[in-house]
Amino acid sequence: MDHKNWIAILDFGSQYTQLIARRIREQKVYSEIIRYNTPAAELARRQPSGIILSGGPSSVFEPGAPLADPAIYDLGIPILGICYGMQMTARMLGGEVQPGTTREYGSARISVLHEQPLFAGMPAENDVWMSHGDQVRTMPPEFTAIAETGTCPVAAMGCASRRIYGLQFHPEVVHTPRGTEILRHFIFDVCTCRPDWEMAQFIRDSIESIRRQVGTEHVVCGLSGGVDSSVVAVLIHKAIGKQLHCIFVDNGLLRHDEARQVEETFGTAFGLDLHVVHAQDLFLNNLKGVTDPEKKRKIIGKTFIDVFAAEARRLGAVKFLAQGTLYPDVIESSSPIGGPSVTIKSHHNVGGLPPDLKFTLIEPVRELFKDEVRAIGHELGMPDAIIQRQPFPGPGLGVRILGEVTAERVTILQEADLRVQEEMLSLPNYRDIWQSFAVLLPIQTVGVMGDSRTYENVVAVRAVQSQDGMTADWFRVPYDVLAGISNRIINEVRGVNRVVLDISSKPPATIEWE
Ligand code: XMP
Image (cartoon, rainbow, N blue to C red; front, side, top):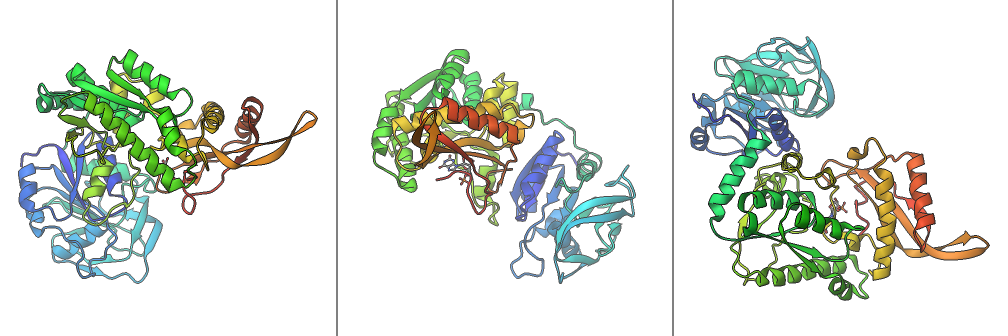
């Protein structure tokens, strides 16, 4: 059967579903996560080269357990079921699954029984990552076991004539060291995919489709200086030039010198039509006397919308609003079985615009993961300083200044934060840090300077590693780097006489302090 060179991943709710999609795209094959119950007719129409059935939290024995359309097994499209996807396949095709009494969770060692095609070229024994309760007891007719473990006689199964396979373990996680090889065998040998998912091609295609969609209309884009909105702005600009108008709101709560850098990079170097709104005073005024963290967030959010809307109105007739929506946001909002529950909301998610501003959304990177957006930025010639930038919260320093936000406190924090940034950059593994920053505490402590006592501010240093911001561990910053940060802040930043380190993980702490 002719196929369109992509892999469909049916999502049964596993925490690893996105990882499967990424692993496939890393092999330069396009993959898309779709609903677990997508009708076979739709798949027949869209012609994926192969179908992967993800794992999931359910047991096939639960009433209402999610099931694929049984007709997918008759499409003649290769299928790979992973964990729950394998158990469901076994059951739907006439095999038997045995309910688990305990959940097997962790590393296991499989013995390969049949090398071809999934384990081709691999050793006879391999470490894999298991996470399951139920397991296949009897395979469907025509299936054979292709790998086993001491406790699991059918650790993998397959039916070569129907090109349907199942893995009890997770090939997509790093704890299955040769998992990528198994996935490669599936997508290239079984599904006969070609590696054609290239960012350069994506850029060419999306420029064409942006031109087609926009025609002679105009587009407005909220630029924050973050990775997503920046890449979107540069991409759209490449497609339609001066029909794109970017609005950058300087809320006064950005990092040291950031507003100027954004202006210089996008306005000057990239030549975007950039409208910078200097709204520092308005934000500070609205925040006067406010100490409650939620109130601060709301005020900052609302002020942003007001300023953005006023500027957008000044632009006159604009039909489209560009947004840097990413694939994980799209999957989460459409996932049938929950999926990951929290998202890091983009700060220019201008959802709350007043009704007189009716835009059609244009979201050119909604099919992409963050690392792919970075690759596009790179391809578009954007500087590393922008595309490798750490995430920065929408309310900015507003949630890192505990208590009231004042102009003076913003300056102290910007100066302290700059020292944290500069010193952290000296780390060879800087890229492993998800976020690193300073926090200004609402207390003063006693210190001594020369012969006299001081009574000044405390700054906390926070550095975390994380995959997605939903869980995080504190980053083990080497002592000498911490010493450099502390010395520089205390000696160079007026108004600070003490530096402390935050060594809490999320959960139960959060990354930001407010
Ligand atoms: P927490 O503090 O909840 O942060 O552990 C998780 C991630 O989200 C970012 N964050 C925000 N981003 N608006 C944003 O755009 C916000 O109000 C906000 N609060 C937290 C935070 O920087 C971290 O990456």
